[in-house]
Length: 117
Length: 113
Image (tube, rainbow over all chains, first blue to last red; front, side, top):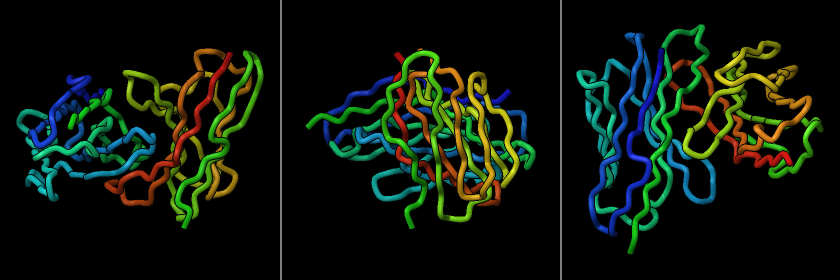
């Protein structure tokens, strides 16, 4: 069965600290896709990144970076030099690759990040 | 483009009342989804559609029905609302292929008294 676990329910940091949000997933499929979404206090869901199971290359986008490790079934998200605007709930999600699964997302429980000035 | 829109934004129902949530997308996406978000549980899939005229059950379909009569619209119905259906409902759509991200609507906050 598919499952996504974000063990950190809440994280609080002071501005400029680095923070890593953990995501561990379970799937039996060899083809799958992983996503991160951000939900700021305003409530909308903002897409951050996707990664397919065949691409283990890490990615950096400005202060954001993602570390995908198939060996540990993890897809962790690091914010460098955090800012108050990073305060949000962050969701990791999994989608299996089989067409008959419809591309539906399995979400983790979310990690609420609070960045204090 | 408006993207994905949801109507209404807020609604309060009494137990046993019925209502329909409307999701509309103007991106010509094949796939559409309804999720509910509850505290500490992330988002859970209610129903989804892989194309006009097709629907399928997700993880938590009980108490809900859906219809996709037009490609751009995906309706979520509650026939007899229960307090357990108090939640924030999100609609999403995405184009093929399978690795594309889902585009989410702004959400509908529903309270059932």
